Amino acid sequence: MNQARHRPTFASVNLSAIRANIKQELANAKGAKVFAVVKANGYGHGASQIAKAAVAAGASGLCVSNLDEALDLRQQLSVPILVLSEIPVQYAKLAIKHQITLTAARVEFLEELRAVDDLEQLKIHLKLDTGMGRIGLRTVEEIKQAEGLINQLGVIFEGVFTHFATADEPNQDYFNQQIERFNRLKASFAKLPELVHVSNTAASLWHQACGGNLVRFGIGIYGLNPAGRALAAPFTLQPALSLISQLTHVKEVGAAEFISYGATYQTKQTEWIGTVPIGYADGWFRRLQGFELLVEGQWCEIIGRICMDQLMIRLPKAFPVGTKVTLIGQDGNQEITMQSVAEYSKTIHYEIACALSDRVPRFYVD
Image 1 (cartoon, rainbow, N blue to C red):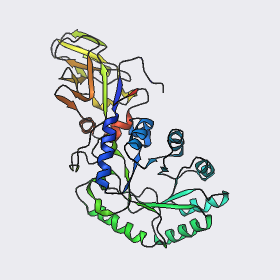
Image 2 (image 1 turned 30 degrees about the horizontal axis):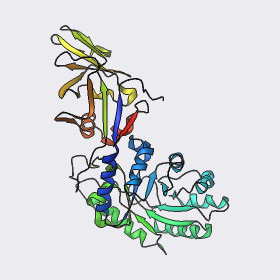
Image 3 (image 1 turned 135 degrees about the horizontal axis):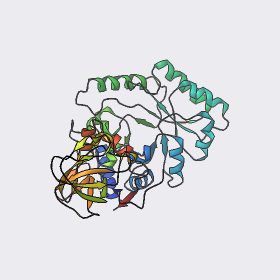
Image 4 (image 1 turned 60 degrees about the vertical axis):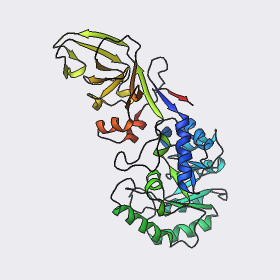
């Protein structure tokens, strides 16, 4: 999808906020390494720029979802890059060539590596499934098999890790079960690797005692609390992204007129209606009908169904075409947070950030 650089809708990303969040986490991590998680295009913020800012602020490495994300970043940065999911074995040579660290989550993956020559430079992290139920080794027997295969293959066994399902929730019962499982599985290794990591953003904020010497810092980089409003973060996270547009059309409409598809909104009286060039193709969901945006510090409701490329808002008065519209961010003394957008959408702020399509240009400020 091409960026729409010739319309007045864009995301502004504050790199100073990114660096501040990383530095605060480094202090919070108390000596543990911090890897910045920049998968999914940096959670919609832009992987390249976020990765560079995170490394400049002290992050020791990066985590991504797939090999393509890793290869793209490798062209720009020389720090360690860990792919958090398994890749097809036929691309292991490509990972070695570009010094990409791989995850092994199945004994079968390690067995398939037997067909690949010259694995001495391949770095492997073993993933343990302690209750997330996604990928990973689950039993002591599997760990023994995996450790034996790693020794036979001659690869560099650099790390072992797990991922928590409920580290961002007030109730810690299931989290504690996962910790217990991880410790039991960890104890079955004949020799632990250099890196042991259990902490995502949530675990690093609220469960420092769970151990490990590396933090995978994800949503916190972007200034977003993984628990939403359920738990207060131990330090102030600075949101980095604002979403901005402009009024492209303003009109006065009489009473009993319908607005947008399906005629779901009818004016009750004479009203000023503004059109904003952003829609569901940009990641601004249809279900945000009724949500309020900011125009010159005043709240303006989205009326009628959100279209693919545009939406309409009810204005308190006539504003000039070109007037700024804030969808996420501050306008005067008012602010629209990504959390508030998520709550209205009945989802999480991760989805709001990641849903912003490539059509929306990202501009970076310092």
